[in-house]
Length: 483
Image 1 (cartoon, rainbow, N blue to C red):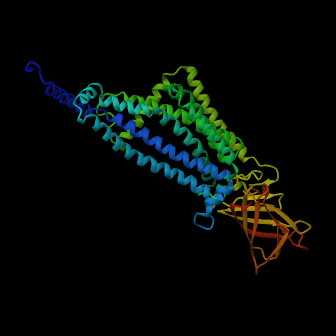
Image 2 (image 1 turned 180 degrees about the vertical axis):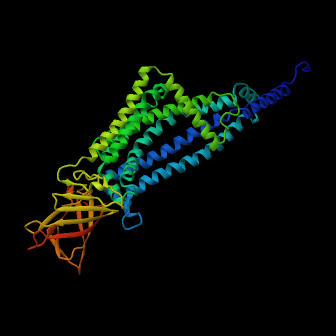
Image 3 (image 1 turned 90 degrees about the horizontal axis):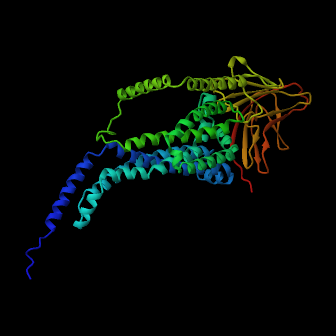
């Protein structure tokens, strides 16, 4: 039986595959650059957030456990290592490195994946079927949509474990107008380890909530961003003044603002995934372009404000006035003199003796802290200049402002140097040490193993009533060797 009436389908199928390859390659060339940028941006955001989360959790765990802090400090160089500060700065550096590496890696993987879609294989029929149903731009958009949930959840968790500690560091810079003293910053992190952990747990709950589609809608940004901005402003003032409600405000600011910012970013990224212009997303950053976008943004804000209803305008104005009033209130409260405190008003600086974290002043500013008009402590840089008048029994107890208590499982060392001419005695846990011009220096060590311990200078000198003594004190906080 002859088979000449049947035709070979190979040539026709190969021609169809070639035609489909040409179409898909043209579609790949004309695919908007914005799709690639969204994929790269989301992948880099996920990688950086995961790295920051790991570092932030490690920092909180180290602040919570003095034993772990001691183990980390034991492998760090230097006489006085700062494990918490090192972990915080290392977390930001790790996140930046992860972000940069992820961008380069995803750029390469995206190019390879897209090229595989438009390359033929050894299976002719499979290629025809695949190329007839799969388009490069659709596959790329699907890749970007698959990254949405993780790119929304991980940044919330990462922000909750690293931003509060960073905000504490920035607040100390604002208060001191200089680089913070690491020992004080380490003390602040160790004292608020539980609070930082609670904020991290709240961030984890917020990250889980972001996995729900409803929380990623643009309307969420409209609801959360105004409250987040107000909470951020109040939290900044509260941290700068060291008030008791600073940390709750900080938690609300970080989580609520983070949800609003992520929701707004997702709205822009979804719009970029749907564009059809091949040149979209290929813009190069220029200063002129940035100024033009800023001007356009201001014009859009002005038009949007004019288009609002009168009731909405009143609400916005009331919110702004509330923020300003809150800042003025905190400033006025901070400038009110408290009992048993005399302030040198020429310096326009106020310190509250009852709070251990409020002593932060500029090294170039000499601020006087007088307790009961018989004791004066001046903070100059990372040193304290102490001046006290002995009572009728020749004794004086001078609390260390900024180090009034030592947290449990931590050690405080006071390097004391006598600057007055008369010899005095320093009481160190029952051991009386005499300082004079020949031997003016000693170190007082306090280990808080059983619980938090008060920290103060106890001065004794027989037959020296109403005598004035002066010291230089350099405080140091390290991990205690408690068992």
